[in-house]
Image 1 (cartoon, rainbow, N blue to C red):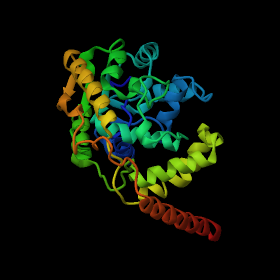
Image 2: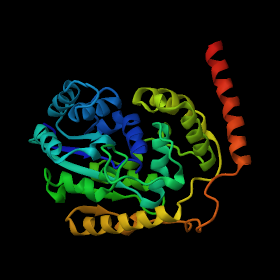
Image 3: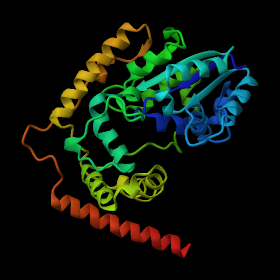
Image 4: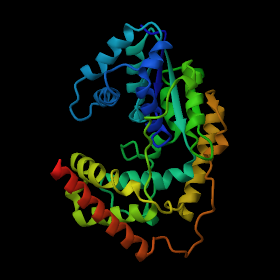
Length: 332
């Protein structure tokens, strides 16, 4: 069994896509330094977690296959998937038990809570949400990774500490801005690898939409109706054919942090920072960086929507790019 098993459990929207893309695109270089990314492809980790959570009829073999590979590796192994942030206490205990006698350590990445709210709103739009930004709040726990139950690093750490000594739980706070280079250096230090040995040329980031693009998406989803809110259809058509290939590429101002959201994020961040500071975890960074940062929220009464001109520009450009995509597919 590997001497160490690092479980990077999220949280979602905290640089996870960047770290996972970097790990997999440099898996050979990491292996040379004694660090294994088990599985043939990145999706192996996602399927393993879905199997552990009993989701979508994924066979448990998807998990045990990773465990078997780790058992034959003498160094450090890394499993990274943000769905692990939604792991229950019982599931965490089972995961750790399956990975023994290796020394299991948990890595939790966390970001500033203010920017998290409009970012989560966009992710929910890709899954069929029709709620406006002005009416959106991150739920306490709706059974998904898009609730505070999985997004708040203190809550995530609180469940994993039932299976792992809190001294073996790292919390990496990315800082008031999304500094992926710093995040990687901190992650690499825990894994015991040279961060400069890995190339970032082919690393993918999870790009956000502008406010106007997100609002166009919301209105399109509302027009399409509830059929497009199902998991498979929303992932293939809304996310896979409209949001990510087209809308995320359009420039424009990002969604603002509205006053009610600012207050809720600040309250949630204060509670989380206190629990992390008192929990005995190995915090890397400053927990105060979880507090909402940047420009102050819009004053009450200010416009909370993009202008009609902005929306029209996004809509016209989107139609043109979709037509170009369809023509390229047809001619190919």
